[in-house]
Image 1 (spheres, one colour):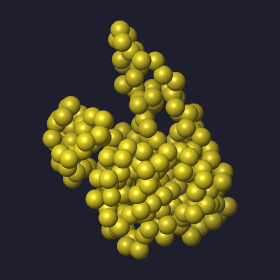
Image 2 (cartoon, rainbow, N blue to C red):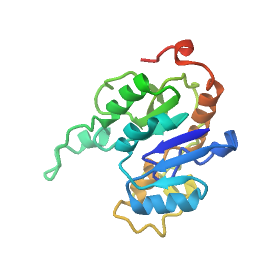
Image 3 (cartoon, rainbow, N blue to C red):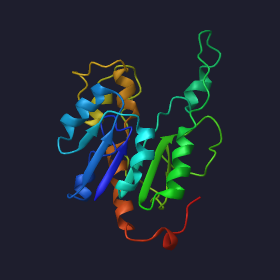
Image 4 (cartoon, one colour):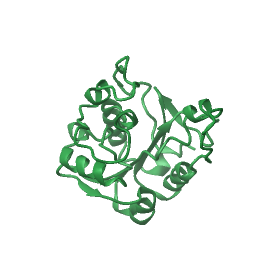
Length: 215
């Protein structure tokens, strides 16, 4: 089974996929070379590509059976609105690549797919399935619970070690420009990633016509 993991970061979503299915071939795409290096160390059997995930999806989607995408969330996050009155606030348009990928996958990809992002400060432009702190757009129905673990109380504190411990990662050797606490907070809980992958596999042989379109 060939899987495409876009905006892979350190593979929080991917961490337990092999517990669901052993014979998988994962291609991970990550723009940050340092994160790509650390992802490769964490998952030595995956193929890791340093590239623009959005462009890679367009050019290579036909080569895969399952696609997971976690586009950057900062321009959609409620945190941006909460900071808008700051003197040095940097106003930005919401990054519409999120919805480009949802629409594209829903109409052109014949396998199973999942797009993950934060709950935005606006009403989502396309219906999603809300689970915990995230929205998921998929072409299969998710269970009511993704078996997500309870986060430690100081999880969101800048630089707090529980960020790393919670995801079973070590950012000590990260030499890139991103904040380490931000990297850790952006990872999908690995139990949620495992549940979503298992759910997709449960209906992997049904055609799009049999299951019906979600949107």
